[in-house]
Amino acid sequence: MSVDLRTRVDAAQVPVEAGPFFRDTLPPLFDAHQAAIAPGARELRLRDFCIETDGEPWTLSWQGDRVAVKPGHQGAARVRLDAQQLGDLANDQSTPIALMSNRLLDMPEGGLPDFLNWWLVLRAALDGRRIHARGDVTFDREIRRRFTPDDSDEEMRAFLEEVGYLHIAGLFSEAEMAAIEADYPRAAPHFEKGDPRAWFATTRDGVEHLVRMEGFDRYSPATVQLLDDPRLQRIGRIPGAGHVARREPGARAGALVKPIGVVQGISDVPWHKDCSLGRHSYECCSLTVGISVTGADAESGQLRVVPGSHRALVWPAPCVQPGLDLEPVDLPTRTGDVTVHLSCTLHMSQPPVRSTRKVLYTGFGQRPADPAAAEANRRRLQAVRSRTHTSISQEPGYLGES
Ligand SMILES: [Fe+2]
Image 1: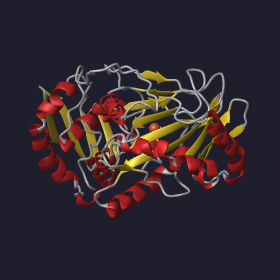
Image 2 (image 1 turned 60 degrees about the horizontal axis):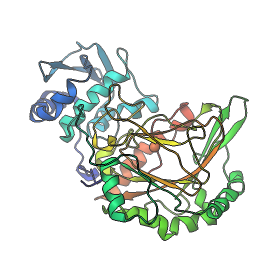
Image 3 (image 1 turned 90 degrees about the vertical axis):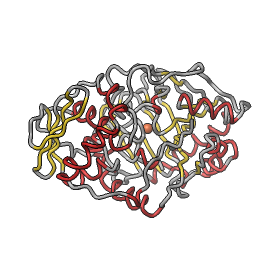
Image 4 (image 1 turned 120 degrees about the vertical axis):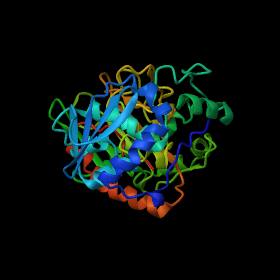
């Protein structure tokens, strides 16, 4: 079981035209992947769904365990897309969640759950991936485990592949974390409102806080030292799938503060996969590494994950799919602990209620087959996404991972 789930390359992307796509491309794919679609689809509430592309409506319906595609609008739910949006959706560059996050979701009838249910069916047909059905994901081991740095890479790899996360206790010392924490106030003056690297949130007392500093390593020599440290570099090798630290110097780590009582702006993110905005089949799974500069628990902004969700084609956000038969686990950490999650593992951070939390995020990704084509698509999508954290109150997917 590898964590390399990639099935597409950017350079091989085909243009999509609504008429031929719905008339000629989709129906044989629905038939070919019937076995991957039907068990999961039976558990979804699939209402007739119209996808209208530049005014051209096609309706998908679930009839007698099969998908029927018909021209026209007979749907109980309807989404309006333009040709680019349909192409990006079909090519897995974008998702319903990305459209929602960017305030481009145009659904005159029905709602996001309708679109997400049908998105699962589309992904199954287009990617040949089975829609999750109850009982599909099982475990051979206890899904709550805290590793120590003395545990072997092989043990951690097996756990990560099956369960989707790692908690490595005590990877760094309190003194090392204190040095990082001391750099927070030194870095903060470099992050001003309007800078896309700076995220702000307002607490209920009306005070605005700097909650995220992307590219913190630029102002924190202690962070650079930590990122280069063999203890951290080791994490990229654990999956044995060619992960490398792909971020550029000066953009290698984000430093977060999680204040209590945020009422506006993004501080804590609801359930999501990091691929919830698209590009799963090009990039997953990347690794996100959270370094607990201060400890975290249920009252101070801990991370929660849904073990096994990386192996399940389910809603990628903004909540755990209704009826999902996988249980979340809490990941309380102490200062110096590290958490690792796969980009496909559902996760969320709990809003702190007792004390604030500080955490550094960095990550490892796989090298794309065609780096130039991948970068061109990433930049095109990023141009829309970079506005997300200023345009909505809660962001469903972290945007900065490579
Ligand atoms: Fe995330």
